[in-house]
Image (cartoon, rainbow, N blue to C red; front, side, top):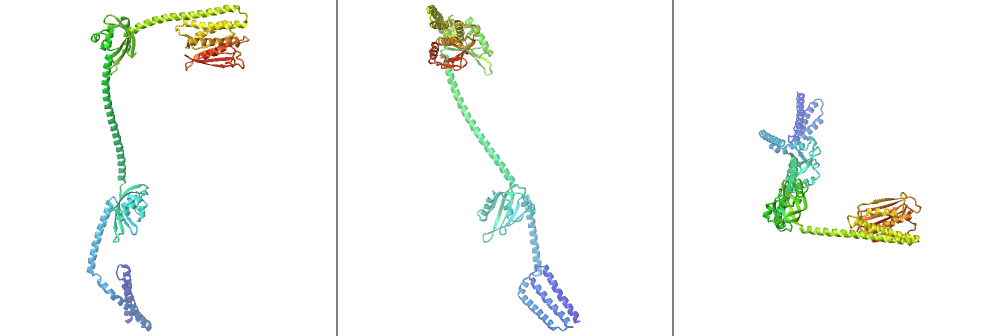
Length: 615
């Protein structure tokens, strides 16, 4: 009976500590869990003493039983000692009723927290802003789901670290954001507000409006800061667009303002010009009226039918009519019949647009029946549509001039006859001198002297030929020098008895070279001497050859005479300036007389080129 009872007690003592230890491990929130462990040790010790009671029944190991009882007594006393200071705390534990009330209150609080949490989540989900909560001490940051999705990130792609936001701020904006946060931490600004760019997952940047409020502890240190992110990219883009539009609008306004200023200035200038034009027109009209009525020539407006529309006093004085009398007539009535046909032809040409104006000399019948010579200049005015309107005629009395012209013509005719007579007499006198030289040459036996006489005769003949051409020319002051040269060369070829085919003559003469007597005589003598030299000395063997004569006028108003042959040319050491030849001395002197220049080329014959200005 003792054995069974002790065993059952021992089993109970060993079971209770196991249950206590299991309870303590499962309910770690139970206060004073260590006292349960001491009670477990005490109960185990008590159970062990009951087991020793059973063992001593067969084995009297009383020393071991006493040791276990001593251990049990130590554990029991220690547990009792620990219970005394713990008793007030145990008495302070709430009663079951209090626990029920506390539990009910906790449940209500938890319900309120759940409702608040739901409202918070609804606010987070319903608001388009991202929320962040920064623990300044640990630098841990809570980022809401909207904060992450706003930048294109998944929930797990953003860590709850402060560097997540610092690394994503645009490099150009980071200093501004740090400065703004520091100002808020230093309480310079009551709220934290900043606009900056944040890097999205796709590599683009979004404009963010970041707002927050810091929380300071009793020492004035920031412990927490909560804020929100708002995507203002569209607003920024709209601001940029608006800014561009405003800039464009300002530019357009400035352009329009400038244009209006220009228009205003132009209008003012135009008004001023118009005023000046009106003033000028009034002055011009006054000057026209004064000039019209006080002009020294007759001025009239004539209708398309020939009727006088408006006449000035000078025209009335020329024809002897009053203005009223003239305006009742037509210009056909007072025009001489012999001049009317030509005048009407001019009028017809002007009306069909063939000519714009015409000038003619005609005769008018005066009121007293006499004739007056007038110089008439007529132009045609047109309407704005281009149709003929009326004629403007300027009439100048040229009766005195006509009378003077008749006298001058008569005088010129007399002088022309006299000049021709002089040319004729000079030519005859030169021919007489030539004949006298010819008679005198019959008494000369020396061959050299005979050549000198013949050359003198030829020179006189060339001058006589010029005077002959002068009185035969329609222009008594000038002759056609090309025609003169042809006759002169033909005479020289005849004098030197050049047979046809031996020496050929090539002439290149400008027909527009007209020379007066002062130029024609020296030029004729120069060509006479050069051709004579070519005929006498250029071809000593009597073979075939060519002589070229070129006379032309250049753009510098100079005459160029070129004489060349393909004969033997000049001697190697020939000096044109110092030559015993009378003919070449004469050429040099005559060239100087003409204020000209002479050039000589001695190659395959000889070429003389004389250049002198037209006087």
